[in-house]
Image 1 (tube, rainbow, N blue to C red):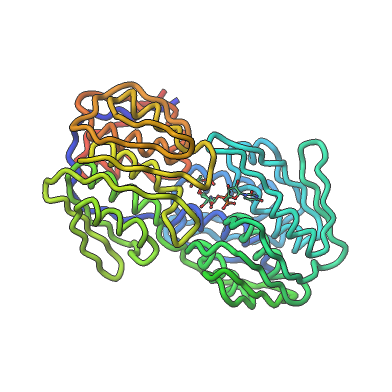
Image 2 (image 1 turned 135 degrees about the vertical axis):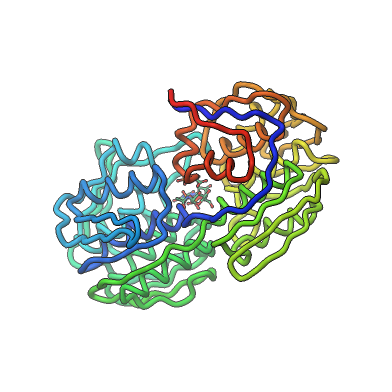
Length: 420
Ligand SMILES: CC(=O)N[C@H]1[C@@H](OP(=O)(O)OP(=O)(O)OC[C@H]2O[C@@H](n3ccc(=O)[nH]c3=O)[C@H](O)[C@@H]2O)O[C@H](CO)[C@@H](O)[C@@H]1O
Ligand SMILES: C=C(OP(=O)(O)O)C(=O)O
């Protein structure tokens, strides 16, 4: 298993391009299954999760051509296998996103039950209830979700009992090809929902209200070809900003957007960062100053994203003062606390709240990555720690960060990958 070795303290100063958003690219790739012709998707990030989603679409019979310059061409007309096998789903929960498109397009979908993961139990009951409300019959057998629809799915008004990003995406994709009008209430408002809706609209879907709590879809009988550019990754953006803030450094991030990251940018300002913002770039400069600890609570968009919680905690670990960090989305997403404490951080857990008292310096240590964003927080901690940090099990990081060590090296960081 590959490891990352970081010699700290490491500078962070430079300019980077942000990649396409993983959490937008995954539903958009799944949504390509709905088309009646080839679709072109550009600005896909080079990530293990994207490779897995492409492999999943291919094992269903989709014809996929990858061109480094032109992007990916997906022709789903050859799909002949309506199953997402356990081997793929177990490495990437987002495989559940093929459920809605397969069912809407083919009337049949067999998707291995995704189960929980390191960050929490992650049920999919709201996805299933919504599809049932649209007329599907769903059984869980042999570890598979087996969904069937006789004829087209039927539009319905669905009130989701909790805000769910994946649930909103599955139902939005299903509704695009359903018969009649679907209203999704208490819908997730994340920018990735808007990106997916824009992709569906580019294919010919009739969708209003994406990005608000109520999305209205008038189903169409067919969706067609289009060319689409995936939006920038707001979590990758926030992660590099957090690295610069923790290291008292400076970073300019190009090919990104500030408007999709407001709740996070506010926290960097509160921490004492100087921010400059352009139409497609963000610059953060600590001017050599230690960050101030900032308190926050995760919640669905537009509030502070759970996917940025651990990286801001790493910054808080070396900040001036004390802060409380409350995680409200996933029950086990404060797992990085134990590894950060092994590096000399002073973090106490009280239920779903972490009380972080900033220390002047962390110390390098061998640490274990346990999930994607927790791993990113350990990399940030390694960069501000004195001495050597070895981050093991970095396959988690490779799910969601494109060439993380190369990008950090570009900022002057002393980090290298050791194949294992
Ligand atoms: C690929 C992708 O886009 N992943 C993101 C997506 O995950 P994902 O779509 O899995 O997360 P959800 O928004 O669905 O989960 C939010 C909460 O709802 C609960 N829930 C969800 C579905 C359901 O049927 N029943 C239920 O109870 C979950 O356990 C969780 O507590 O949104 C999360 C919340 O912003 C992010 O952390 C993930 O990075
Ligand atoms: C939790 C994440 O991803 P996933 O939902 O794919 O596990 C994430 O991107 O932080």
